[in-house]
Image 1 (cartoon, rainbow, N blue to C red):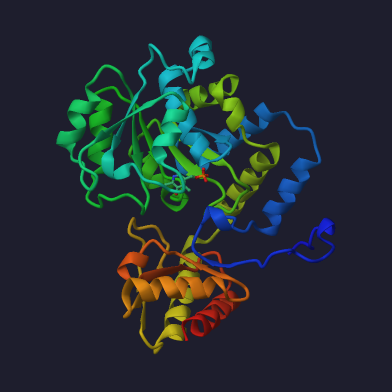
Image 2: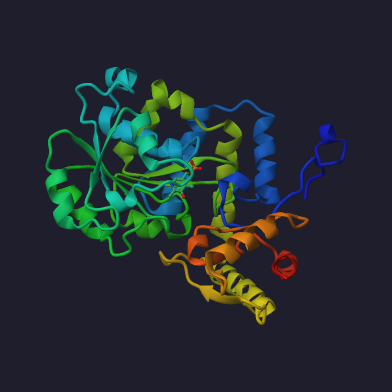
Length: 371
Ligand SMILES: *Cc1c(COP(=O)(O)O)cnc(C)c1O
C-alpha cells in the first residue's frame, strides 16, 4: 500500500468506498497490485519509444488471448470506436484522415438489438463517434439468425458488433452462428468483451476480427483498452492513430502497466484463485444468514465467467432494496453494491476485489445498514 499523496497533507478528502459493485467505473474500477503500480510509476519517469512497446504488447496480448496480435488503446470504449474505424478505413491514409466523415465508406455497423446496451453511456455512441451508422437487428429482447442474415448481406455493411456482457438481454443469442454467418458474408466481426478477460480465449475461438477488453477491470491494470485479433485488423486499428485515434491513445504508463498486469495474470494459479473467490462468497452468505427480511444466496455468473456473486433478495421488494442501497452508501466507509436488480427487490455483491478481512467489514456494514 502506497502512502497518501503529499498534496493531501495526509488526509484524503473523501471516504474510500468498500466496493462490492464489481469492476464499476464510478468507483475507480479496480485496485492495481504493487507490481503494476511500480511498473506504472517506472514508465512515468522515462521516455519510451511507444511503437516498440506496442510491438511488445502485441506479442504479449497474443500469448494471453490466443489471437494473432493485439494493441493497447485508451479504454475499451475507444477500442470499439477504433475497431469500427478500422473496419471502415483499413490502413488507407486518406480514409483514416477522412474519419469521422464516413461518406462513401461501408459505414453501417450491424448490432443485435439486445446487444445495444448502456454500460454508462450507450454502446451506439462508440459506433457513431467513428462515423458509423447503427443498424439494430431483431427485437430488443431477441435476435436470431433470420434477423441477422439479410442485414449482413447489405453492401454498405462495415462490420458486425457483438457484445459479451451480463448487461445484454438475449441469453439464448448464438455467438458462434452469428460469427459464422458474418464470415460467410465477408463481414468482419468485432466483439465487445470489456469485462470478459477471464473468458478471452473462448471469445477469440469464435475467430472474430477483434475482441475488445478493458485492462482496468479484472486484469487490474491502469485504464486501457486491449484490442486482440487478426494481424491485419490490429494493424488497421493501430493505423487509426493518424486519424481519430489520436484522441484515444494509451498513455505510456498504461502501456507498461498493462504489460505488468499480463505478466501477473500469466503467473496466476487460476484454480486456487477461483477457490478463493468461492470461499469469500461462502463467508459472506454464512455471515448474512438469518438477517430479517433478506435472503442471501450464491449465484453463478450468467456468462460462465469464474465470478460467483451473492444475491440479496429483499422480502420488502423494490422499495426495501432501494432503501438498503441508500443506507449502505451512508455507512463509514460507504458501501457500494450492484443495483441493477433493484426493481426486482435484489441487490448483488461482487467480492473479487475484496480481501477476506474486507468481506468481514462488508458483512458487518450490511448487518448495520440493513438493521
Ligand atoms: C466496461 C465496459 C465497456 C467500457 O470499458 P471502458 O474501458 O471503461 O471504456 C464497454 N463495454 C462493456 C460491455 C463494458 O462492461
